[in-house]
Image 1 (cartoon, each protein chain N blue to C red):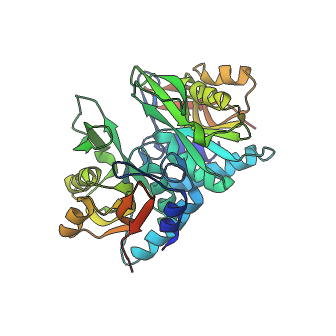
Image 2 (cartoon, rainbow over the protein chains, first blue to last red):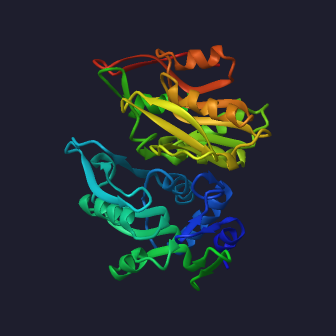
Image 3 (cartoon, rainbow over the protein chains, first blue to last red):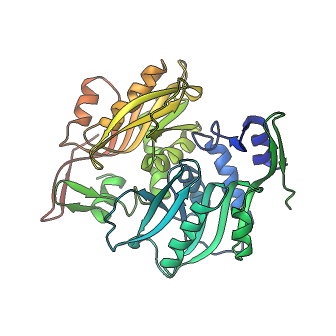
Length: 194
Length: 194
């Protein structure tokens, strides 16, 4: 087990309905020392990539993205959830379905902050059905920029998001991939990774 | 001028209606090297305080809070904006009025992550009328914890938020206090600080 898998076993809580609560260190309370380790690991996994910008989505992706960005020495841009009906022409827009909140959100990024020459590392805390990630990839594509890599903290390997993104050929690295979990015993099975 | 004031003069944009756009480095695109400098400056200004936790509010506070937290070697907790009508008993709740979005939001923090012994540094990107900050202070008070300090990136000194908080006796440090600005000339006047 790597450092993140160990932490999930130690402090994560498995709940009925395939819910994994990691809010004590990842997405409500945030352990920035752990995020630092994650940044160094992403740096290792994407060592052959020239990355000049990190893209994430509010809210819980922002913390990880900023610490990872300090390892890569690049700025972060975060996609904003917007309820605005009047989106002016100065933004890239993607529609993102939220599984947790059972609603559709538009997410936007100002055109000022993504350009064709940008080599983007997308960072997020969770990957499940992949809707948020698909929205971020769409925004990078709208800008004519390149997705150099995708770094995820926790992937729910039993949902389809990761498989689709890998099938599409994107270099996706998830630090912990949960293949199955059992709320009655609290057991979590991680996918073997090199 | 300090490093943040210089950056605001260089890259901030003054708009009609006392709007200061700093979205190219602070709250949409985020310059984490600048955040690092801010963290070191807060560390200097709160050198006499024992801080064991940083509290902020989603979304744009999270990035600064995480980088500042890595300087203080403490975890971050962020208050979540919640539209849930059914808030269960396991959270602290405060009502926050948003000037930008002209609506009221409940913000919540799980009771698991704030305790009476916590010595909290509140971090946020902007302070104007102070509603978000009052909500965060209320949440710390509900937990029986102590506000050891409040660190803000940009304060609109011509609005009442900062004055009220200082009148209440809280140690509030804003790295840049804008006393006035003029959209027609783009001029920004900062308050003198030691």
